[in-house]
Length: 274
Image (cartoon, one colour):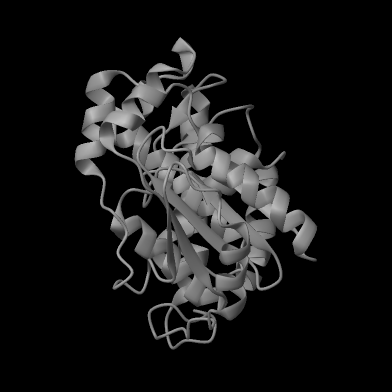
């Protein structure tokens, strides 16, 4: 019963709903509750959402953490705009791969009320009007007819967070059955292990070459992934090889789609103390 995807306009109350859910789940659910919050991945809102590449990097990092945290026993709450239906579908595929349910909580609000709420925030936490309007224009509202948005609960601004209904939806929803595109690639007739070895080796090779002319804080472009490696120290081949072996062992028990291996490996390196 793991994944709750919270979605809505900017300033629609998503983080408050997430806080309410977290408090309720920790009292009513025996397993662990993990919060993945968009605010933890961005510096300023306008600089993130005005740059397609930066925004893409944020989504990739959040999705990578979902892959690492999702399980059949714990609940993961993803707090963010999550406004692209294709992105919500990718999250659905992750849930299918783990054979565990997913549900969507839509924080409904009018555009004008959302803007007034945003204006009431401290200046450092506001959106610029141009960025705010652009996000509203790009927003793809969830639809219960789409299997990746279902079950869907919609909550209005003046309504309490339906915590009990969210938990009930997770308990009652059947785990999605994986199909050929989302099943465990270690059991599927694919070249996943070959790709796992090849892509991680290419990343290690590129980091070894790139860090020679880099300084601490530089972000290196790497092959087969839009994810950038942040240089924190000059690593030896032995250190990178050890990190690679640890990642390979991890990914074999938490398999991902072959096309995302390089991205997950770079995210792993960026977050791991080597």
